[in-house]
Image 1 (tube, rainbow, N blue to C red):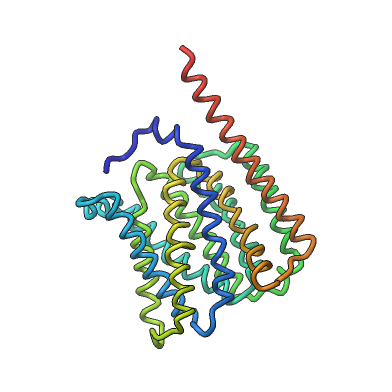
Image 2: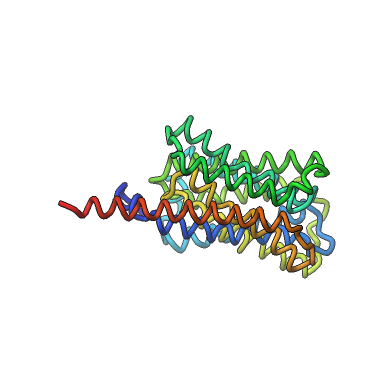
Amino acid sequence: MSSPPQDVLESRYGLGVAMVLTAGFCLSIGGVLLRFMDSATGWQVMFYRSITFALTVLVVVAWRYRGRTPEAFRAIGWAGVAVGAISGAGSIAYIFALLATTVANTMFIVSITPLCTALLAWAVLSERPRMATWLAIAMAIAGIAVMFSQGVSDSRLLGSLLAFAAAVCMAAMIVIIRRAKAVDMVPAQCLGGLVAATVAALMVDTFVVPAGDLGRMVLLGVVQIGAGFMLFTVGARYVPAAQVSLLILNEMVLAPIWVWLAVNEVPATMTLVGGILVMIAVISQAVAGLREERARETAKAIP
């Protein structure tokens, strides 16, 4: 499958925004599914989640490329190998962060992703963020800080460090995908799943798990990270890096809400206030970008 030309990439901004927002929704269910595990260990979760994720991506790639699947994997090059390695490492860090500390604390620390991404994109891609983007990022970070301010101080050190590692991995992956935006990096996510599954297979004591836990782990692999990462990978090709990392923050807002609804972990009033600030930042940034895109298309149409 040939890469889309630059004008097509630029014209799909709205589609990219929708994909990234949907990706955040899918990724947000990870915490609540982990809370419902009966007896599966972290490495068991990591193995089954990763292997089902890799298989899901492989099926999608094979369906899209038909008989040219090997060419799709070769086309990702060393950038795709880097995306796969970083994706695998980030997945491991994220899952064990959720297991080591609360969903709220993990989401707060992962929310620094926009700052990491903006700095990396500025240094690597020369994508100087607009002042509006910096203001939206500041609002989002402030909102999440308000959401979780009551629980950050007692977070476990290990979980906090793992969440920080996950944020750095996500930022690096966004920048690499954006730099190689003419290349389909979905096959690289399959490599990421295999990396994480291989590490987990070396660490797990037994592969025998309860049927209920197995079903939840399959959901993690197919829906949470499978659909989430593929939508994210494709959508990130059409949206500037700093905006991608901002839009994906809807995961940070939704994840604590699912835990609240499912296991009655009631968020504090400040959590709700902060969540509103984050959603305002995400929506305003998306709307501003769409308006700019429409203005560019209108300018192109004028002879």
